[in-house]
Image (cartoon, rainbow, N blue to C red; front, side, top):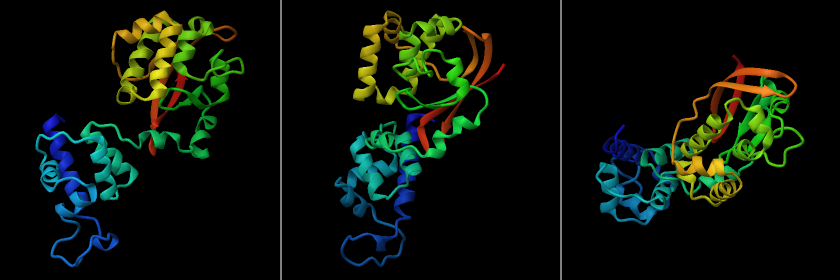
Length: 260
């Protein structure tokens, strides 16, 4: 979908949601009896503290710059669910100001327990690529990262800064460079977050290889594919990597290594 198509879809989505809001649930003053359901454009504009003209342009899909803060107010006025709010910001191409708050929410135990049900190596990454859950097979495979010897659970920090990674990961140089490009693609909208900026600064100072890879500004999708390892005790290993997003927590990624 091109930008014009996204603006049109955004406007139609907002309009549809506006007409579905029960007026009785809001305190807008005056009579709530009306011929058409939902709220009027003037009422949403009032709730969002924006001009009616500007709000009308948004619904009409006209070329207009909508800030993330204004979109957040619209989402709140429309009483959007988490899924609908995420869809709103996806169409707009803007970062949701509440995304960081969602990241900090407690992760349900059932999500953290998923890796334990998988027999092959599996781990769960957060938005900063810190491993927050993994199974026994992953502990055995990733020497220096998911075992007791590790001081950091960050995948990039392990790959670029731990000597064990360069020995374990076959074609380390190519794989490491690709990881930097995948991380940029995965976190492109959040690179200004302090946590990510600090991680990039720290890795750039600690690893010349990461600094070179990061400065290329390469972007590739995290597709999975073949992964090969040279394990110190298990020998040569080959897997097919599969990546899945957690439906109700899209910032979380489940990575599974299936036998090749």
